[in-house]
Image (cartoon, rainbow, N blue to C red; front, side, top):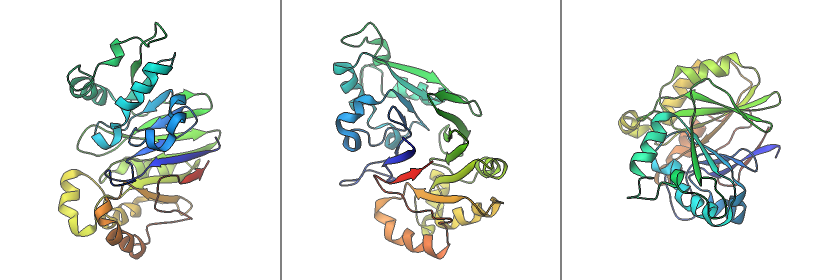
Length: 258
């Protein structure tokens, strides 16, 4: 693949729409918000999932995908996440109460475990085939990260869910290999207090954050819009001129070239 594909882009599930999920290669995903409906039988090819944080809209398809792996696969599904995210998944999801802990269960046709958790750290690079992913610290209600995705000399920065945060803009200002940033807005600016408490961007907040960007050549894409407020936010996106250099509001199926 010479592109990344948006498999899910909404800020919450709605009819016919899934939550955050980005396909980086045939075998690599970031987040697990909409794997099964987007990929169908191709989901069985997924071997690596990099999680940004533990909120349900970013992990919701993990159990279903693991069921597919258990029945048909001979290789372990690798999950990469911050230690805090892994701890939450083990405590609240893969605990034999909500769902079996498949990191302790062998695949049906193999002595390998169904699932393996791998801890990632901010600023460390993780290479799989010709793709490198580096976790970037973000500002959310739980410990979280975005990912700097790199292939050859081209890079795309995905912030995932975040609030006011100097780190991502400093990275963009320093690394000229980054041509694209995918970030979020979740609520209209009229809901600024909810955005502050839940640590999400509004169009107004993002417009203020963009003043930290000292480059004019970055394409800016937006996702994670809450469906009930999309019409209002689309008007604000235009009014604040948030989409730059061919950027767009992302929907399921959208492709961004490296």
